[in-house]
Amino acid sequence: MNREPWKRSGRRGITRQLGWTWCVLAAGLLSGCGGMGGAVDSVADSGAGIGSRFKQLFAGSSQPVGETSNPAPTTNSELSCPPLSIRNGASTYAVGLPGKPATGPDVRFQVTITNTARDCTLTGDQITARIGIEGRVIVGPAGAPPTVDIPLRVAVVQETTQGTKAIFTKLYRTSVTMPADGGNTTYSFVAEDVEYAVPSSRANPYYIYYIGFDPNGLKPEPAARPGRRAKPSG
Image (cartoon, rainbow, N blue to C red; front, top):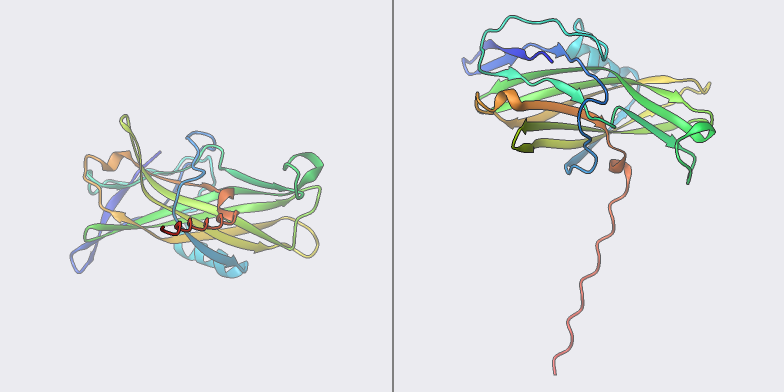
């Protein structure tokens, strides 16, 4: 996986911009992410609006999942924009009829990831990354509902031989309106608020961006258990 070099933007002399790059993703390479904590953002995908935002940010650098990204000249060898990969087991999201597994004739729909992109901006001691995801919603034999909710998790992780450390993790929810004719459709999503502290030049090579579907994010949180009433004294 290629790392994009840092590039100076010249803005106020303190900000450096990382040129965007499309990422090489091999589904099933790395460990799963279900159950990681984090905040939730909800975005309604109206079709043209979200898709246009994706193309506005990453137009001209499109690269489908599985293709090799083009290398870029290095202007700062110490820091680079981390590579991006799909979590193992989180590359597809399928839903079945109520109470039934998403297999065979009971599948209502399946969501996949087809394209991804990321760019990074360094400002002071903070990095802000934008992570873009495009994919398809495929209608199953049981028929899809009018609106499909898609739970996507984005994480920044430091992986070393000593273990794995979550630097940033957040669950996003986007929704897609299915075509009236019952056909398949596409979706686009851009996370623009991935922020974390600048790693040291020694730690930077061990940083990686992970994305994937997190169905647990659609489950309602359990109700808080009432506290025990104190026994009366005496």
